Amino acid sequence: MSQTATLSEVMTRVENMSRNHRDMNIKTGDISFDSLDMVKIGSEPHPLKPIAQQSIANRLGIPIQYLRKCPEDIQALNLNHWIKYEKNEELFFRFDSNRVRAIFTPRYIPTDNMEVLQKLDTLGYHGETRVQYDLDDEFMSLSIPDGRQTFNIYRERITPGISVSNSEVGLASLSIAAFLLRLICTNGMISKTEVSESYRHVSGKILSSLPGVLNNIAGELGIQKEQIKLSLESRVENPESTLNNFNSQFMLNKTEKEAVNWAIPLEYGFTMFNIVNVYTKAAQYKALPAESSFRLEKVGGSILGMVKHTVN
Image 1 (cartoon, rainbow, N blue to C red):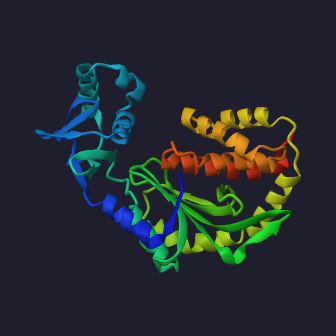
Image 2 (tube, helix red, strand yellow):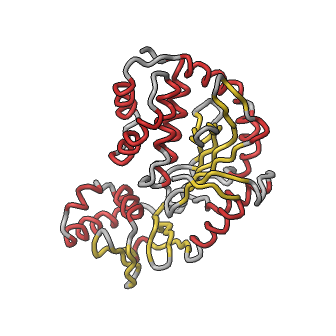
């Protein structure tokens, strides 16, 4: 669930969370497994966090759901067999103290959350800047409203801004997009538009590209205003059916669907703007991890971008 803070406060939290983080290139020949939960580097055991389990299973071509159903000795048998066929001489391990939080190939260069925050500071988003943010061990999203550009459409008061998201463990790529904040209820929306950018972590140009991308996103405001106007004018005859269809289309998981059901009575109505706001309100559901909150805000933005194509 999103919280409001200054960028300086977010930096402090990121710094505290990363205090025991370290990275190492590990020789593939030194890697073995006692189970899906435990990897050995030489003779040293290290617990594998869930994302690390997922990444090594994907890397070795073993279905993670199959592995999780196996007893530990069969897990070890599979993992130790297929690690022999890994083509890279080394793999890149990210640690949190003794635990492995992610595993990548050496070519993959993760972007740290602190790097993103420091880059924003150089672009004028200083420590006192107010932001909405979600942050956990796997995902960070920041939404920075620009109150100078607040506008009204009918009775709705909207503040635009930017959204920046990042995952140090490869859950998603570094992403930069337009952001819209509905002031009446602080629902946030990540807009999917043509100049929104997303990067894989394999290029040193990621952070240096930020200034140009931010300038492009500022030019989206006219498009967003028109989409909001269209959504307010677009009637929906059966909101429940429309929501179920979007839940399926965007492949929401069980907890995300629970969040949508929680939000329906809070944003119920018969326009596409109401539908959009069910998803952006759902992002505030307390049981959601940071990545799911961001995802629901993005679903809301994607639906907003589809309004002109929607047929009721």
